[in-house]
Length: 315
Image (tube, rainbow, N blue to C red; front, side, top):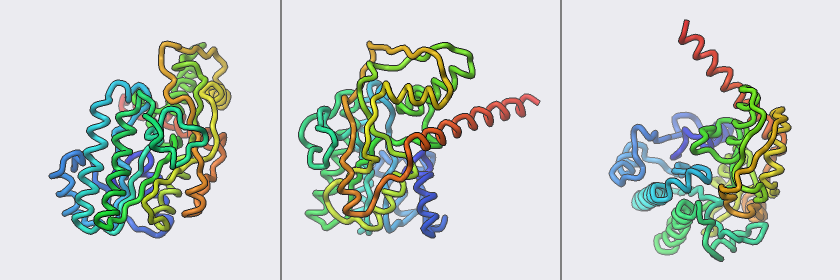
């Protein structure tokens, strides 16, 4: 499992352990040992681990700001990783390859709810197009390999994820952890306002990370087809409403300022999740408010733990 030590990967590990997959069968290449953008490292990784099934989660990814600052790096890294991993898996007759794609692959003005058949009906939103196109190219690669070589690869399209263990680094985080950090930090520091990007009019859909992990496991167990499949919760919320919800749940009562010079990103995001339910019985289970509360509580525990660590180091 590439990316197995990351945000989604740790939750996927937990789901696999629930199904009786022992630690000795969960093989996770770490970045300090293997640079998966390099063919030689991918070959070395496969030779050492000899997997039967590959779940490819690893990605160079971030929010709007990170995508805007690193378009070339994000395109190359994601394209190179997938290219080498899929080709070397084919050469080794890997039993199954599960590629986790991205909602950013959809066209900028996709009709809501996004249906998988709309994936090629336009160009992605400009700020994340290089990342989205690199990931979407891997769908084409898997479909071509299935057609020519009979290679068993499937492609999943998860919507924006959130939950405990998310990336809260302001320079690279997605919208939910970024907003939680802003609100909680503002309360801790006595600030009377927070600043948010754009107009707040754009909408997003969010999937709790443990639900996403369950969807990936179900697809790995039950789905064998060339067509991509959405993984989502089937709802949308405007960024303005999201900010107000997170402010309420964190207890932040200050002013919300909107920086209109910053982009909104894709105007709307909401997935049609019919195919996932029909093909492998996946339906998101976590209530959005409950998931947000759990994520906020997790972030606050990290602050407390970090403060304790600093104090202990000073003693």
